[in-house]
Image (cartoon, rainbow, N blue to C red; front, side, top):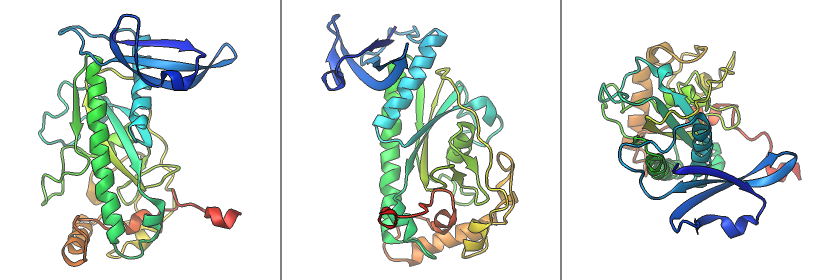
Length: 304
């Protein structure tokens, strides 16, 4: 198989990165600490950089798939992702996509998230700042780069992979893209859909940007998590245009109109892009800052 897992207790620095195995072929090695039989050892997931033989799957057994899934997640984190989840696309049956057959032939989606700068988000009051604009743009670019690398990783295992851009609006009338990264993230267990329609993670709140890679590799999927918004109305109270209706959901909303006055939200972000200096994207950020999830309770200086 292209993917092989070996365990040993040799020095990490000596084997990190790329190495040459006895067969003389070049491999990429990912490492993590694992406990086996009471001993902590390094676990290597070795992925060949050579493409598999056409028509053959190099990952076939359930054990191979589990190993490949964990290796993929580790690789995505090494590339810069803060969170990684696998969505079973069966959970997204009927979701709107562009084109309509985007999901055809795919069974899984890899969702990856990168955190926004806490200091930059905390500085938002009633409008986006130039620093937030730059952080937003740079993280989207990082996510696109991570998605391309994950695409290569999956293809090295003999499967198809389609990276979906982190932030590309295809329809500025209905405000749609290829697929909802938030819906994928919910299915992948990264978080739940909040009252603002943003993805909310228990630890990082909505202070995340997302990207998706579609694949036909039958990776081990993650499970959705419970919605914890409950009676919180922080985002609705903070919205400068009253766009958030303060309506909760168990998993996800059937339609955006259930949770949001979308026309108000869109008008606001377009106004920000048009009228505010150095704001070159349709962004706001006020509800992101308002959410109690992801907000640091005390600064490091205050805890000293």
